[in-house]
Structures are given as C-alpha cells and as structure tokens.
Image (tube, rainbow, N blue to C red; front, side, top):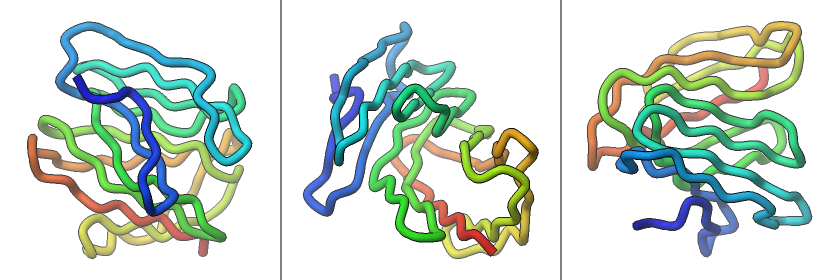
Length: 134
C-alpha cells in the first residue's frame, strides 16, 4: 500500500490512494509548518490543511506534485473514470484552469472559495491540473 500522504524531493506534496477498497485516514502530518489530514479510498479523497478544506474528489484519486506557489496551484491527479474535484481557494475569485495544457477557460469560486472541476481520469495515466488566479 502506498503512503496516504507523502512529500517529494521537489518540495511538493502527494496524497490519496484511489485503489483502496475501504476508507483510510491519516492525521497530524506535518509539512512546511502546517498540519495535514487525509481521508482516501476508491469513492472519495479529501485533504485538509490546519483543519481547513483543501481538496476533495469523488470518486477517489491519487495526487502527486501538489504545489501552491504565488497565484498558482498545480498537481498531477490519477483515478478511475470521470471525477469531480473541488478545491478550497480564495472566496469570490476568478481562476484560469487547464488540464494537460488544454485551457478550460476562466472559472470563479463561490463565497466559500470552492472551485469545482470535472476531469476524465484513467488508472496509470496522470492528468496535470494548473489553476492560476486571474
């Protein structure tokens, strides 16, 4: 079994395991001065940072290379089939979204700061997602 949450040599974060048949979770994972919690399995993956919502996917996913730098959030995501991903970003803000270099246009977060995107995923083939504040 892969680690539920992990750090990479490039300073990014990885988390989730969409192949797990039953829900698994890990709390109190420290990374760059913050505390993370992950819940993951085939039906859902969720990440919290300092008890605040960061990421959720339905069905579950595996994420590698999560970076939040300046106005940009980027990561590679892998899963099984059509997946809805919700990200916790800034309230009422517009973002430019691309998946594997394909521009999905501009999308706005709601008052709660949530941005929802749909991505087609296949096991063993990661999709690169880049979200940039406009």
